[in-house]
Image (tube, rainbow, N blue to C red; front, top):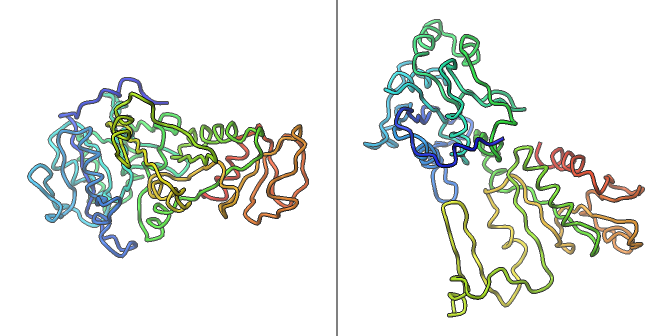
Length: 365
């Protein structure tokens, strides 16, 4: 569920956005704040996302290397823990609420932040996402007046934020209340393996004979995976010529004038149109999705070595593409409207949920 009244959102002056940057990055082996994604540091990505929703921002942690006049840094009074970072955020803010984010989020979501802010109430002291992975108290909103409780717990040398939450009136946002793509927005990078997985999303392709309904199945899969919070990319292979630009449009005029590549961009989307004499290699087609999606679902590419799910329809009276004359080792499953006895799992062609379960378990767990 998305909240309709947060679409036209201006940065708020009564909320302070705080970046937690006091960690030591021991598991990553290098400063996480400085890691680059698409040429931009993780710290810059987080700070920019906060700037979309908060007119005031600051850094919790002794980071003069990151600080600016508009984004000051403050050392922790109680260093060495996330609870100490929260104390820092509350201690140096001058607004009623603070919105906190760790500096190691590669894909911070302004839409998620707006959703958190939209659930603030007078009878609530914290707004925190709650998902199948657990609670996310470091990507949350807190009322500044809980500062005495935080300090008292620190003086008791109890560093568990979960224990603090037991004494607060918390609004937990379950998955159904979080915006699309919440899994990606809540993902942080702790180890080199996390970064490698982010930059190399799994790819699964759907193949089938013409008329089987593979596009229908793909659309259902995209909808199901998106509803579960995944950020899904889609790529269709067309063996024929197609036109995505139309005569009379500005980009069409630019291409007609001789531009080899044209693009159009807005605050919410970008489209690039490139003509070529030779079809690009599959690796080139997959490259734009790197680091931008949790999983890429493609249609076609039946001659590739990508993991394949084949759609099959009994009434077409045609054998499978990947079993029979050709025994394709990259086939991982079949979706059919009849029972088939195969060496790979076989799913109901009309049951995208079970197929999504299979994809999740195999590629995203």
